[in-house]
Length: 87
Image 1 (cartoon, rainbow, N blue to C red):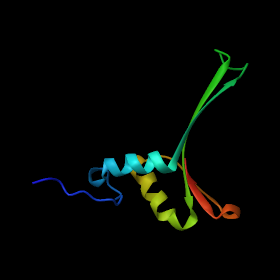
Image 2 (tube, rainbow, N blue to C red):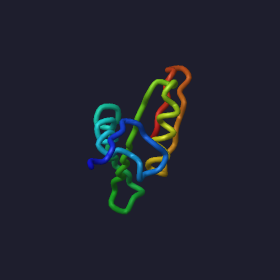
Image 3 (cartoon, rainbow, N blue to C red):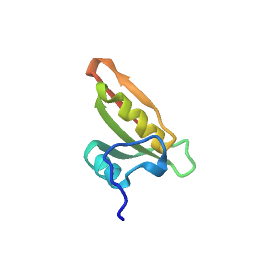
Image 4 (cartoon, rainbow, N blue to C red):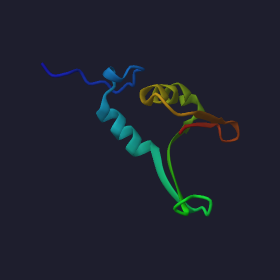
């Protein structure tokens, strides 16, 4: 018997379809690696990784499920753009 596949995200990691998550993040997310010269760091550089998923504000429940999936992060609502993002 093959496992049941679902396209929905649940709030517990054991029920998440990782194939769905992989495809969703491939289509809807951004990963930025910012490298900035900073004289006050010992090596002289700062590295800032950023992972971000921005969706329409009506998809806020989905962003909350993504936050639950990772167990970390913040959700910010941008009213002027009628959007919200997880990072």
